[in-house]
Length: 283
Length: 320
Ligand SMILES: Nc1ncnc2c1ncn2[C@@H]1O[C@H](COP(=O)(O)OP(=O)(O)OP(=O)(O)O)[C@@H](O)[C@H]1O
Ligand SMILES: [Mg+2]
Image 1 (cartoon, rainbow over the protein chains, first blue to last red):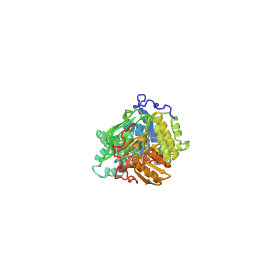
Image 2 (image 1 turned 90 degrees about the vertical axis):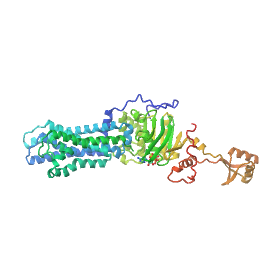
Image 3 (image 1 turned 135 degrees about the vertical axis):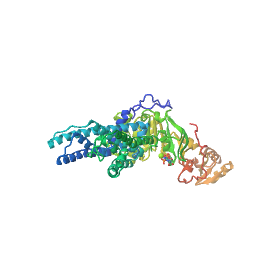
Image 4 (image 1 turned 120 degrees about the horizontal axis):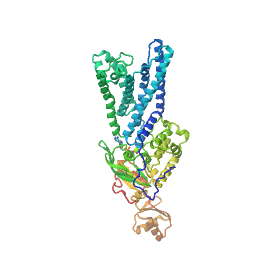
């Protein structure tokens, strides 16, 4: 059955010689965590539906743009393609953490690797890889869509991707995923984490903040400090109501607002959640 | 190999594990026995670093669990076979383990074959596994890294009789090749056949320990059951020789060893039909009795008013 039989009974060892066993390299832990994200049925469907959304959104935007004869540029396409990626994919960041508790796989994961921070770090890297890879896909699809738009409309194809706006779009995407990850560590339950994440990232901004922003006098002053989307809107080139709204000016305050909103929604959950993960009992 | 020293784990005011010390040695199967809620799983979770102890420590081969590099290669752990992602296949679970430990993919097939999960079953999702199949998968996972220490929480749970027999053989041969095996159970007969040593725990405290023989020895009361062709004649002879005699079923119960009774019968020239030592209470009875005040149901025949052997009179650390 086994290749290396335990030492024979004659010499009953009391100690375990571990000098010949190297530690599990971090890259291996990352590759296992990446695999764990995608190897369940839920993971498969999440990816499949996100891919479908990407194509559907591209199709709808193309139809609208062509029908109304609105010009669209490469920059516009990147913005458009980022939206479907930010809808469902953060669930990967959440379940990567919470499944260890909700599905109780932590019992195995944390016995194979008792250094919990190493597993959390590996999951974090896996999430970043996911964001980068899907953003690259969005850019590639955006380029294809841009070419098709040129072919369909007969207009000139404009390759005007603004380096700074693109950079901040990626950062924005990354911050939302990290927020999902931090909340997941803090809450450690799949349904509760998903609910809280969507309330904070989608429901509040669209249902509540958007009304507050236009109706309440202090809205435009306060919201950019407490909501990541509002804080980053000037940087990613969108208005207060998302891409398409009136452009906002980037000032020194903008960076301060991004920093504060990041502190509240990314750093704080990460730190508190990290502490919780380190201390909690795995059952 | 596994050394538990003065381990205590409290939850608020409740002490789940109370000053527990024992060792599980290499080359032996150590049974960890106790009723529901006795603290077996908690002890094992502390061993594997999943639960921080309140006091005391556990070392495995002289190391803290968290200091073991690639621990799956040294310690095989099965705490709860149901704790697996329902949406993963059995094969995938083993593959993840093998990759983490840096083992070749062929090891997965070896382990699947070892626990008799066939190709089709291995590709099913765990959601659709039967209890016994999950248990087999859990055992396969514990053995994956060819560890020299095994920590198994109720490994026989859900296995069919053939599976239980197979597992006994497996663990026995593992210990024979020098591995240290610690397995918990609340079913005594499951463990008594393979455990070289047993640790009995109740309400977080160790109530007795030793080999099966040692545990039973303390309990034997040295009396004899005898049946003769002429019981009355034998009874008279025994009483004359100074022994206490009471009627018991078709025969007599005598307060001395069988050899003495045989000698008396020989001298009285009474033919015997049956002669044997009073069966010491079985291990099962002993177990129920020792853990009586920690049981949920007072076991019949073990009046909890007299908790038999006080914890410290039990063969704690008796001769090996
Ligand atoms: N987090 C916790 N908070 C409070 N009590 C706990 C906690 N974890 C375990 N316990 C208690 O500790 C005791 C020991 O539980 P444990 O799971 O170790 O028992 P066990 O011996 O494995 O029982 P079983 O044979 O039923 O599996 C139980 O009374 C349990 O309720
Ligand atoms: Mg238990």
